[in-house]
Image (cartoon, rainbow, N blue to C red; front, side, top):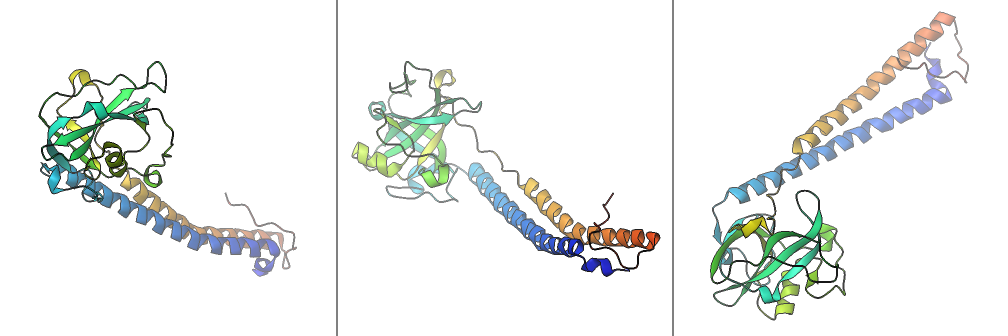
Length: 265
């Protein structure tokens, strides 16, 4: 009664089913890995954001590469803003996905070293893309700032191409080593996204807190793929039984090679 399983159509169907099972199991493990990776990232971010603020000099220094555990940690610094050497970072969006600039201002510490401060987002509504935009001034004189520590930006991590030959005082990526060469000073590794003091008139628009990645979604996909993997042999068995009953009802002991498998409802 089950000799039809040796026909070409059923051999192909069986092989496809056998290939689907390990593929779906592997996809489930990949989603499991993504779930664990995102959960770990969310835990690190939450831990950093909730940690007590510390002086920036305790965390980073010239040439230091900010680590994953140090990223988003709240730090403080006291010094003065150097607006004469301020630059803007092109092609940055705000919370409403409007394209503009990030304002990057050197912050000179008491010992002469420089901390790069991303003061936030401003609109690109200016006379041209080549002219330096109008940037709201930061607090004058000696001030204490607070912000989230961030690593130097790279094309590999951000997907942003570091275009050369840009207009004066415009950059694509925030990189402390490049800014150290431009300023001719010692620059602390990484930079901070300023969170305090808040700017007058809410401009530059401060960068919002990093959101949580949707790790539970990956967990749901993991379960889904494994359920699919379990459903393949069950579906194959249902099709086989239905085909056998169909052939038995029409009284065929030797099914024709061209007969197609019975369609599942």
